[in-house]
Length: 358
Image (cartoon, rainbow, N blue to C red):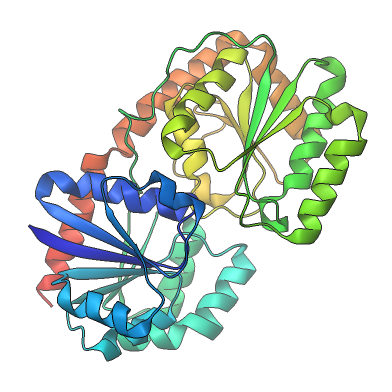
């Protein structure tokens, strides 16, 4: 059994999803992934087949790294761990993974001013999804470093339409954190503009109860409590990942859609998951979704900030049944063809094979 280790600070969101999807993709090749975190988080409830460890003590972390017999270690986001792991004495393959670093300016600052010296000195390679701004920045900042850019994978057997009982009222879903980058205020504006023509329209918020900006959360809750037009909003906290296909399918059956308002998306797992469940998507034109969301083909896209355009596209999804059926069928086909776990495994194993030859 070959062993590899994934190191991240907090088990939550798309990165935690990726860690499990990667483990599933590589399991048929007798590769076991351990997951090492520095704090607990709601994503731990989703980890059932992988060995997940929350360790803060430096000596215990060193013991795990040095005694784990890991062929490769992937460090995501926390760049200082690259130096720490090398100082432990680890000499195997060390990869720095980037999935999302906020807005494009934030990503540039993070990589140029903070992470660069650590990546230059300690990482054997950089791994990102095929997100244009991440590819551009890493190519410019690390011209001599090996870089691998390939699609994340998704389990399309787990994420599929569940054929639920049809919901009585249409539902718009939103998955994210209550913080400026996720642009939750824009979603509320879109919803409020849709309600006059769709008075029974529901809004479902799927939130992480542990990660949010306190001032934003206070404003968000006050809006929901005081604005009568938001009376049909419902909040779901920390839904287990295995239950999300049911929720996406319920949104689909209602005649609604999933909406993403993120300013800059690193990848966009929630959108991909919804597409697998025949749930239409409406999303900003963030380049993180450009590898799978194509306007009028696999979803509807609007320019971030253009509320009027978003509302028009939302109305089309709510009321044009023929169009909904066309784009959702195309979306499922596209995801299965381009984002399968098998394709991910092939790319990942080719990367490891190449790095072992260095």
